[in-house]
Length: 440
Image 1 (spheres, rainbow, N blue to C red):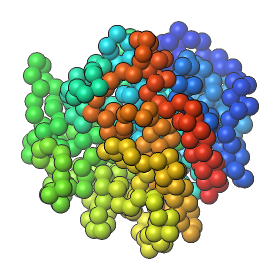
Image 2 (cartoon, helix red, strand yellow):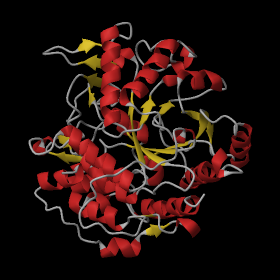
Image 3 (tube, rainbow, N blue to C red):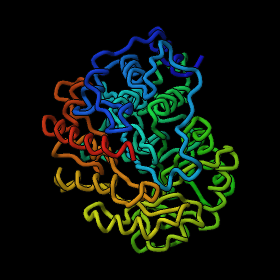
């Protein structure tokens, strides 16, 4: 049984799917030759997070680009094929799956199930370049995994535990006897691929922000310990074998002691040649030559990142100046293995950008080139498609895990985490930009 159907069974649902006529009617369409690429636009996340998992799957199948409706989810799903170097051109959209997880009685769980629901509202990939979702969390965090905390109590995603089960924030362990954590992740991956979207995950590599679970005592991670390095490689390979095809590496700019004056992580980083070896081994052991490794931040030393084995780097140029981005795209068009990226916002964003400025940056990211084949990669956050409420930010949700529910219910959290009427209108405008980009 494929993992999507196994998930439905585990949730006490039958596997026969029914076409969702309403979503078929209201879905956004790509413009021109991309008319069959569809997703739910003009929404706030609460619209889809209130759905059951089965309802979300039925919408995903209803919006099939092929136009074929499958009464049972297909057994074989392959990733959208953009060649081995797809990461050089992709649009990366980071989704904080912990923030949209189910919060109940002080606990956080089922983030992957709600990420499935949000897939219905993520635009599929364009003709020439992929859209790739980056999940903020898969591994456990070390500051209180599975627990909601107050809005100013540390519960940072920037600290991970290896050699442990996947995060209780993300996995639905209440159905763990019917479907394993790995199978739940695989179901998400297959549904994303069915939507025409690639998938990846973020993690830190600063040694003092990584722990190794061991009996009753966590062991500090050490990049000089070959066993620790092997464990890190194996943990990455496990996820790649589930279908994850992009690894977003926090603080990658500073690997090998580069520009450490601006390094804000805690602890040692891998050496340059060590990271080359690690990325090579992940590709080799997984049997995947098409992986995209994204390094947080970039600099003018593009060859350094290319030789390291990265595909793209963030935070090099914003989308504020369309013509500067287009000129950079033209200047780098012969660099096919690595390129610095156009940024809308990043995980450190503390707010302050107007809706108009963010929409302008999205427009630049999606259209800042002469030829689509020369496009620069781009980076944006959940907040850039689905604006957050006025008094929180992307970074705040990365380092804390508060509930915004006013009545204790999960639905109230979804409704109050994000902007409401103005957020819906913003999402419509962002959707229109993607609609025109999909035929490129």
